[in-house]
Image 1 (cartoon, rainbow, N blue to C red):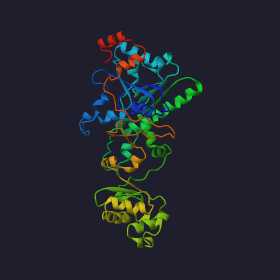
Image 2 (cartoon, rainbow, N blue to C red):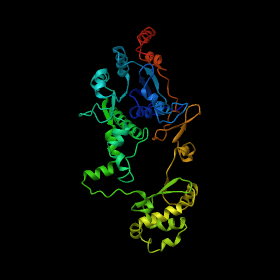
Image 3 (cartoon, rainbow, N blue to C red):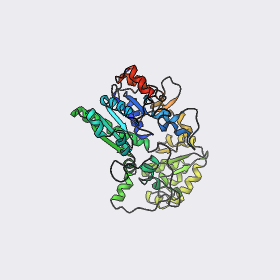
Image 4 (cartoon, helix red, strand yellow):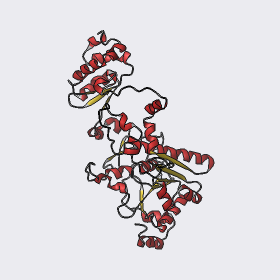
Length: 401
């Protein structure tokens, strides 16, 4: 099998839930050896996510499968000095240490950057937090629903209008983009290490990524821009960049940014060729001035055919639009399958979601199923230099499981 880009890179995933561990997952896709450090017994609390009220019911732990593929599990009690000693030994030969514990917890466990750096001056210490590492909110717990989605303004901005309640997020929708930011920070530090021979502290946080995601409008606010009324789709200012419901209840969104050139083709697709010369809609200015009237007409037309038929018609005429996807589409999305967005687990028994980066000439690992709690504890300890007697002692004390 071809060597991965990060083959031989040793990564300690000392984090929980999604964003920070998912950064380690991307490293593992490219061949890094990732050790997942989790508490003995029930393991990482993230393993329990699908059991929470409201989550899809499945015989498979889908959340854990996605975030922990390719990793090895070391069940280690970091609340004990002996467990901390094991972690320090592992950090002494690791390349990357990833954590999202609040700063106060890191200090209590003795795993701050200042404490690990003397053990290994080549170590990349990757820190992820909810609200950053400074200020009065540094130790405040953060999830993507609050620190990314709500704090950034996104939760407010995606509302149809001011009378609509703020939109709820879905699991991991902010965490996964944040994971790519932390991955980018780690890779940048690895490049720096190639030039200097020294490791470094890198960081990212949910709040910063949320404001980056809403950056266009956030920057407008920072520039003192005057904002317009938020309008529902029925009152959108442009009918050709709006979304419409088809006969089968599915939605599509038109995205005709070059509408002067594309308007005649759209009129023909909709069976209303007369609109090309109709003085009400013949020019861009007239179409925008009568957007509400045009939206009502489009609503009636799009309601006459199913989504699949509209896709054939619009695609066949080179018009830019998007399908408002639903989860039922995903397993059968040929475009995703052909582009390795969806890939099979090793053994080919089930699909999983690939990390969204590809490098020509460097294949990723076939995704290996996520480990059980402590599945690789003995193997990891032996590799770190512990003999059988020492391992037995750590197990007897409950430090390792």
